[in-house]
Amino acid sequence: MTPTPDHLQSRLDRELDEGESINWSAQPNFQYLKRDILRQARTLIFLFYFFTVIFISFAAIFYFKPSEDESPITFVIFSAVSLFSAIFIRWMIIYHTKYVSNSTIYAITNKRAIIITVNKDKSITERDYRADELIHLARTEFPDGSGTLTLESARGAATTNQVAYRHQLRALDNVIEIERLLRTQFGDA
Image (cartoon, rainbow, N blue to C red; front, side):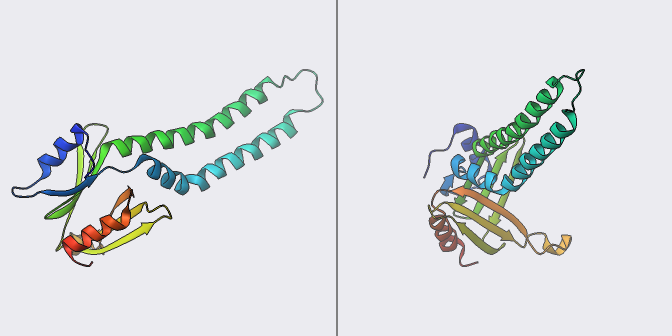
């Protein structure tokens, strides 16, 4: 079991029912989570870069007319701001990923699987899956053994007309071992 930071361990301990014990707990691995988020956002980032280059190219064609009274400084400033905006967007994605990695904990107890996230306003979001609610478990595994487990629960489906609630345990170091632990603990879903 990986050591859990104190600010998350206290939140996790508070969630446990009487007689419930932790069999496994971990936080999302930042490097894997960053890879996953950037992989999902790469199309958006590419499109932003692409349209920035197209816009700068067209602006250059129309701005640089043979006129002596125009200065290229406005064009240069706008081009720099556009390019740095794309870099800033990527940096913000990585910053948010680091926050998520540091403020989320996953746990498997003798009774359920738990996902706890401490939000920026210090409130918490807790999701849990008990064996009798878990209807499906799916694994996405990368060549390095890391990956994501998707848990589907039938909880609330009758009242909300939804088929299932889905949540993920993302950026796990050895995803197949965690899946095996869940299947052993809760049966095949």
